[in-house]
Structure formats: structure tokens, C-alpha cells
Length: 160
Image (tube, rainbow, N blue to C red; front, side):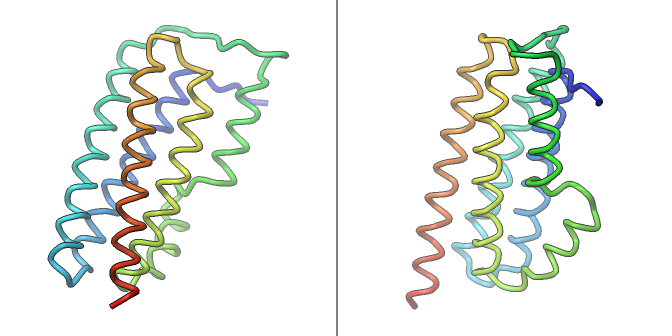
């Protein structure tokens, strides 16, 4: 079994944010409504800010061993979580994005990705030094706000 290092966990978070940036730029291109375009551009910028935060974590990260009941407990759990719940391979991402053909589908895709990232960030909080918990909480709160904004916009578009 391969063991995650804390730096691996942060690298996954960086990839989540990169995927978010790429998706929101894509969504901005397919959206026909100006307010949706602006929202997607804003969310791409926010994800870029999150990516910079995680890059700072990565740059300052020393060897950190999270508290575990047994060796590799968190790494086994997170590897399974990442493999089963987060989209990383280009093939899977392309297949998912092929279904995103309009603004409503973009909102739905984005809402699911925001929920995925919130769950992942909650899980990794136990795996990084306590000094980084506050920054991760801030990112979680921002992702929650993104989800709420996306839900609101989707309702407005589906009720037209």
C-alpha cells in the first residue's frame, strides 16, 4: 500500500483548484447570459486564490505525520476517497464536461464539484499541521458560499 505524505494531500488540493479554474473558464465560455459569465469568471479567480493558498502550504510543508490509529490509516482512506470521488484523469473530465452544454448543466456540474472539494478539505484538515487549519476553514467557507451562489443562480435560471 502506498502511503500519502502530507505534501501529497496538498498536491491533490492544488489539482482540485486547478480543475476548478479550468472548469469555470470553460463554463464562462459556454454561458450565454452575462451574469452567469461574470459569476463563472469570479469563481475561477476565487479558485486561483485557493490554489495559491495551497501552494504556500506545499512550499512550507515539512514532514508531517498525522495522528493515526494505525500506520497508513488516513492515507488509505484518502486514496480511496480521491480515487472514487474526485475527477482527475483527462478522459473522465472530458467525458463529464461533454455533458455540460448549457448554463444549467454548468451550474449542476459546478455545484457537485464544490461539494466534493468541501468534503475533501474537511478530511484533510486532520492531516495538516494545526497552524494551517484556519486557512483551510476559510477555504471551506468560501466553497460553501460558491455552492450557495450557484444554487441561487440555478434556481433563477430554471424559474424563468
